[in-house]
Length: 315
Image 1 (cartoon, one colour):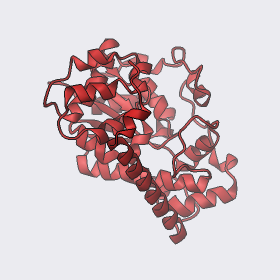
Image 2: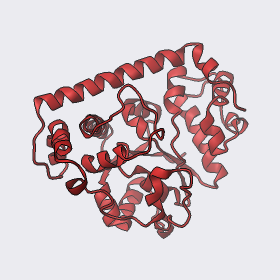
Image 3: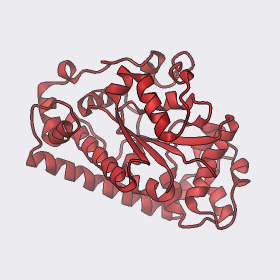
Image 4: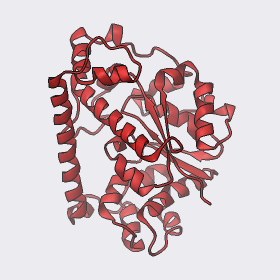
């Protein structure tokens, strides 16, 4: 029986890359860089796949080239009538096999906007949700250089706008956790991960039915961040206090964030001086509407002939 995939969830700048790097050092588990392609394939294919059509789409995805995953090797794992989730999993299985590993995972924060999709495609997946104080995540997000992330209609530009994303996505992960239950959903705090990384990794390994391996903590000398200016902290061991909203976030930004997400901060055990307000709830609702509009527009594009014209074959 194929072991279930391990999907790392978390709002952007919540420490999910740190967790991915540590988990990827496990001898049995391969978690590559962010994939981005699952929504594209999920929108373009339904139910079971046509092998030729599916493989043709794979040749148009730059991620496979970046991962050094030959489409022909993926195609060899496909079969007529295969479920879409199994076909997508074949991409990751090929990646894992090329790295000498038997199990795969994913870490793509963008998928926090499409969690029901993940649940539908991978009905046996285990989910690890990493939560970070949203005010520290906002600090980290707003400090990122321009051009690092794709800016959609809902792209946050202030701490208050980021609070809408943080609240919406954390609550979406909580709904997923209630749907799949504790056997398939594990939640931890970023602050606890960096304060006690071995303890938290042991808990994740128990949850994922993996044996803990000490090399998971010896990632810093091996990780390559030469092309990733926003990930330079990976060159050091887990370090508490890299961001501190108490001293680095302007008071008006703290107030704005808490107007949107103060109640959720408190429910998660973080201190918050303000409770959520009606205006904050309206901001979060507006964010959700913009994300929905962006998702609908993306779906329409991917279902149309324009998608292949915009994505010529790469291999």
